[in-house]
Length: 454
Image (cartoon, rainbow, N blue to C red; front, side, top):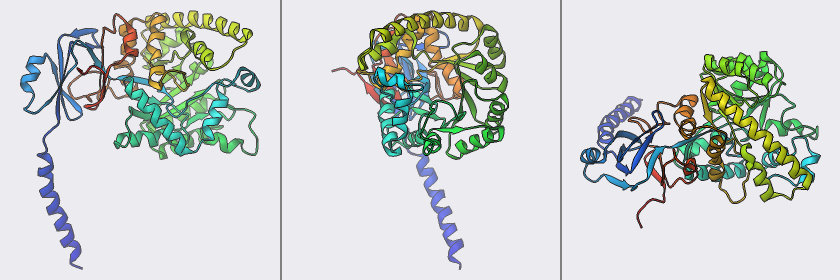
C-alpha cells in the first residue's frame, strides 16, 4: 500500500509548483475617470476624479493624472466624461422572489390582508424553480438600476434567496450581492389567515417558520442557519411574546447573525428594542422616547417609504379599476401618510438614531423594472423632508454599516469592492438622478454603461 504516501507526495509537489504560478497571474487593472466623485461621508466632491481598480477591488482614488501614471501598460480605461461617480447603491430591505400583482377591488375586499395575501399565495404555490428564476430576473433588474447590494428579508420560499445568492456569487447569474434571510419567523396567525386546514400548515411553512414558544424560536433560528442564511428576520405584530423575541435574538447572536425585526406599532417596536434587535424595519409609529433608546443601544431604523407620497395609489390606478369610494379612501390615506412620513423623517433626523433605507419592494409596477420601482425610495424620502445627502448616505455608507459590511461596500475607498455607479448630473441638486443611473460596475465588472461615447 505504498501508493498512498506516494500519491500524497505527488499532490504536495503539484501544489508547491502550482501556487507560485497562480500568484504570477497578472491583475486585471481598470481606470475609471469621471467629472467628479461624491464622498457620501463628507458630502464633498473630488473633481475631476479617477478610481484605479485591480481585479474586483479599489486600489487607489485620486486625480486622473496621478492614477493614470500608476496604471500599468495595457490597463483598461473607462472615461465617463462629466458624470458623477458614487458608491453602488444598497437596498437594505427587499423581496426579490416576490412580485405581487394587486387583485381587483372586489377580491381585495373578500380577503384578510387582501391587497397582499392573494399575490403571496400565488407565489407560494409556484414551483421553487420557477420562483427562483423570477428572482433572477428581478435581481438583474435591481443591479442594472445601480443596486449592487441588497438585503433580502423573507418571502423567498424555504431557501430561494440563499440559492439565488449562491448562483450570483458563483458567477452563474448577474445580480447584486445578497444578504439572505431565508424564511421569516412569525406567529402562526401572521400574513395569511383562513387557509384550508388540510393544507394550511404545509403552505405556511413554505414561506415562514411559525413560533409559539421560546424553544421553538431558538429552533427556528437553527433551522434557517442550516440553509445558510446571512441574518434572521422576525415579524412582530403584537403577537409574539418578549420571551420568544429575546430567544430569537439570543440564539441568532450566539450564531453571529444579525436580527432584523418587522415592527410597525409602538408596542412591537418596544418589544424589538427590549429583545436587542439589530435593526427595526419600518417603525412607522416609533415614539421619540423609542428613537432615543434605539440611538443609545445602536439599533438601526430601516426606513421603508414604499407607500409614501401616494406612489402605491398611482400604481393601483395603472393596474386595477378603482371605484370612486376606493379612490376617495386612497386619497385620504395618502394625505395622512404624507403628514406622518414628514413628521417621522424630522423626528428621525433630530433624534440622532442610525438609519438606512430600504424599498420593501415586492410589487409589480406597470411600466417599471424592479430596479426602477425600488429607486423610487430616494424620491419618497426626499419629498418627506430628508436632505439629498442624507438620502444618499442611507443607501450607501449607513446601510453598509447596518449590514455589517462597512469594510467591503458603501464607499469608494481603497480596499473595498469596486462597486460604482454614475449619473449624468448632480444628485445633491436633484435626487432624481438616482432614478436615472447611467453606469453600473460591480466588483470591477461593467454591468451597464450608457455613458460610453458613440
